[in-house]
Image (tube, rainbow, N blue to C red; front, side, top):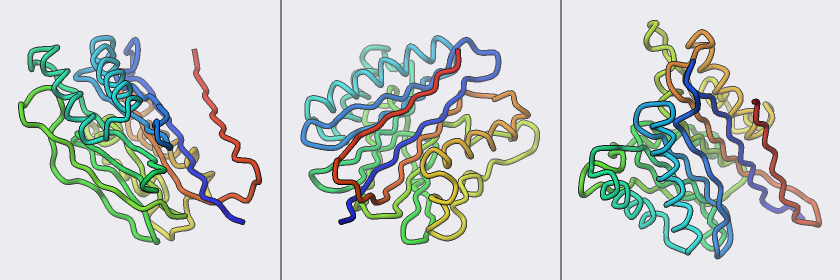
Length: 241
């Protein structure tokens, strides 16, 4: 009997010559079933940006763990950052949730960068305009909910990926780097979610000649199937020091 399997992979790198990345990625289990991945990109880069993105990610994680719905999490995190920093600091925030209660992938986005989605062989951009959190009073997230089905793939990324190569006259083709321009079977052919995340980050670094102009993060989520009797969860982390 085939069952759904969710593959999640992250690839990230700091801005060239920066002490650390201003992007933060955290994973938290949902209390009613499922998992949420929080991607936060703090204003500017380096340690100051990291401090901001950490505050945002931790607040969002704590609310998700308490059972708060994603849209309310994004709004509350915005209010918290705006109050905490006096409306003078911004952060881009994306919450990607595999919700096992509704059996959907929920994408809650406060980011200038779109989210790339492929389903049934069709590739589309979730690019409705929305503001970063922390500045404007009535900021709210753009939320899209997609049924979990084999072949569904979503790619979340920060502006270091989106703007790669622009300073030297190049342009970043995220869908092309992920090999999502072709058929719906393409993702599995390049190593699943990990292959997608790695390919996009590598392409962005090539655009910037190996010296990223901004903190760069890619999150890839892919829905597949498995036939194992035991529901074994696995996580793999590689951290160069």
